[in-house]
Length: 365
Length: 117
Image 1: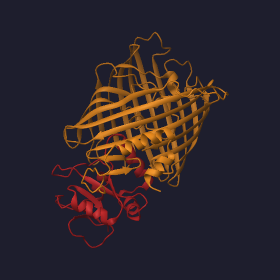
Image 2: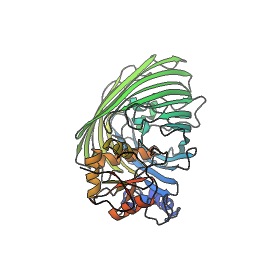
Image 3: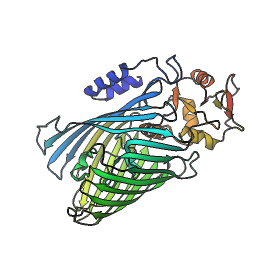
């Protein structure tokens, strides 16, 4: 079975049309390196379609959330397409647009409302200017590097469907402005990113699926940095700082640390953040918030893994800290596909991620 | 052995650390400033499994997931070639290309950048 037939068998019928349109809209003989169609052009599952100096790719996911702790079931489906180009040192554009379709069902009823709350959003649009072989200047709308999770939030690539609150909830997930990125060639020095958004968001940030009840989705200013020291191979330890002013004129200074460490089949990762709040505070219960999660993933061969994380999160509007524990199993029929089944238990505080079952099917195409 | 296009101008053979940095997409240019184009075999091929475990020190799934993450961030993962002949032909023809083959005798038209002991 080819990658294309695997993909088409995997995605929803509506996505099938999208994929076919994408795949047939470009020339099959185009290639970045020649014109014989067999040297880097063509389609690869997970890595998209190369056409000249451009790459067309995306992801699709379907999430079914069955909470037992609140009143709504949710089905969220997303299709995202991103196009990247490597034209010259000065012109390396990247565009990502997503279509989300949320269906909400009253708890324990069989009648759903598909199509409710559908949205089309341009998540990322920027250009990279390669100043040197290690320093890149990025201009546009981009993901903000607070921790590691927010830098690669595609469902097929993250550990679990349910996102720990600390990785998502209380900071500017995107920024529209300028960023200077340093990548050390050998990994001896930390990779660094310094960024600044001087004015309001280009558009409201997307909701966080099951987390959107607490989503702060509009920022007037965002600035900060992230440094990540590569440990051997794919492990790393990072620090984050972000100063922001949200739509309610609440100022926030966030300090964070994140890590990932692998030992044979076991991978540990986690993040801790602490935020001080100032400015307009009329809508908050406390002047600081904090959270931390620790996750473990154990690979059972190359396709299966069991995962777990535990988190405590004290939000600005909660009188008591939310405590969550998640257990899950992940199946990767291919590295670019993920089927996840999870059970999340809220065992204290006001729930951010309510107790319930989550299922998701994600494809990076 | 690790092979490169004849345009690759190095003063000394690559080290395994440098090869890892290339395939983890950290090192993206050769010393003369030209772009490095890493080349890979298909995921279930024996040469790729050997290269990934022996040289990179990872398993196929972990490395593929890493590349998928890099691709999500706009970086280009290694180019796939689905046979040793295709790999060799690509590296012979494309300036800046680097790849690996299982042959023990040096083929024509490429530079040997590293020999696996």
